[in-house]
Length: 386
Ligand SMILES: *Cc1c(COP(=O)(O)O)cnc(C)c1O
Image (cartoon, rainbow, N blue to C red; front, top):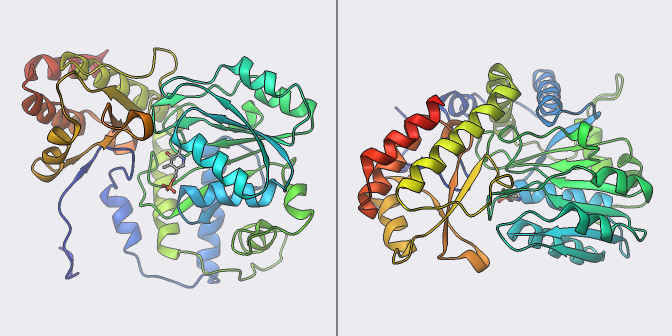
């Protein structure tokens, strides 16, 4: 039992994040805080970097958690790798591509938007067409959490290499929950967040940069002191026997949580974890279809770790989603932008990608929608044993 005086309600987090934090990770968070230059902490930082490389499937020397949420990873990527006037191709097929376009514009990039309807992937040909003229970088959102769509990365790296441009990817919701192999896809820099498929609390943005990206960090001054990787790496990147140099105080206990989260991921194995997320997604999709909730993303474009479903005619978003949270204790997310009030977004992330929490959700939704509870639960179990 906690000795804290504050109280928070019990919640099953099946929205777009944060995702359910398992007790092992909460226990890691509650370990005593030690100093950011303590050799014991330094050893843990090495473990975290190694665990991140393995999760991202990369040999990159640079792999670290940026201090801040997923968006801090985005900001850090742009501040370090994009210069004013750079022509940057930005895929926009949902809220997070839109956020990146805004971030790029604020850093003075000449943004070339390549768009798709919210709920669809961007055709690779459209990105390649934009890449026929010289450009400095191409950015895509691998896992659009606003729509539940996975963006294919095939063919993009070659187009970038032709113009000596960088391939930049937002993997916030795909990391460890949807197949992702940064080195095989030729990605030069990527960032993620801890509160999606890693099941740690929000507050860190795992990030990695390859050797093609590193020189851009070092040539010219980065316009942000906090996110300047040439300074941050003096602390995070252990080169030979140089001691780690203080830049800012690492969020020590969040790093514990991330270390424990990565241990859990690698105990399960990345491929087994991807397969479990895909199975959980399919099973839940079938169960919700029994209740009249059809998936937004077409087959083949779906993201394992987030299931966005259309609301049936006559169902009002808040009339279901609010009591689901306040009475049933289950959080799911509503739609954003053009999809507000039209979809629900259900996280299939880490511990959320298990049959027990999904059954709780399916039963609660069936009761609130007046649907076939038995049929939906049967479909869920059939999906899990398929
Ligand atoms: C959640 C998310 C972010 C932003 O992360 P925050 O932790 O909210 O700052 C960025 N991109 C995608 C795809 C996300 O799902």
